[in-house]
Image 1: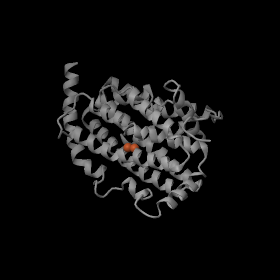
Image 2: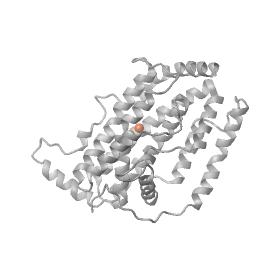
Image 3: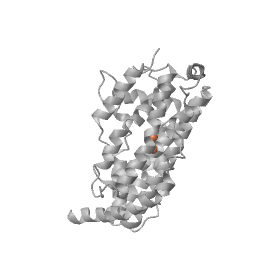
Length: 326
Ligand SMILES: [Fe+2]
Ligand SMILES: [Fe+2]
């Protein structure tokens, strides 16, 4: 056990070097990146009220399911304090303020923080949302916290974030194109810029895991297998509305996302395939016995999951979210 912990610490020390080195490639300089106010009506202008009117007119065209998915996505973004505290609870990493881990975590959080900020303001102005109900769900999600099966292990943590950033990229990108179809070009643009942030984040986390594979392939493989056996659970899984238990809201949220094709069981498999390719899982031979078993489990998983996905029926059950007016 001691050896295991020491090895983790050693590997993470090695990885933190890349976290610092690559930070400016994966995260944009603060004075150059977009801010929510670049995309929102400016309240200091005389045209403010007419711009809001226009925004509300376009928002009227969004389908019920799309608004529901957008609210779930927004709450997920707004629960950022949970992710930041989870990242700083990880063990086997240097917690010094200037360490690679802590510096990366702060900068990543700072970039992420704009997502919930932008979407929340849009939804507030849109006139479609029961803001109080949404705010209650946000507070619940942060207060409840979540158990996503990573424990405090940095390997599992970065495997999770690699997956999660790819998933949020897919979701925001699809909401963007659906919003465009529904005639809301402003919302489409907002979700588009958020999606491109998520794509950079995914590249970062995937890169960190690639570097771990270079020096500790068997343990990285075993961590990947473990996360896939547990299944990658999105933070939205823990959503809840007033009077409901944790998990009850998620079922309806995921139904809406599946119906619109915004995030489906097939997307889950596609993300898994992307990671398998990126981390060159199939061709890895520098493994111990447990590592080989883990590799074989992972490589056989996409086809198995696809067969399950093909048998899934499109969810028809309509549901009235407390978050949406009318
Ligand atoms: Fe985000
Ligand atoms: Fe992200």
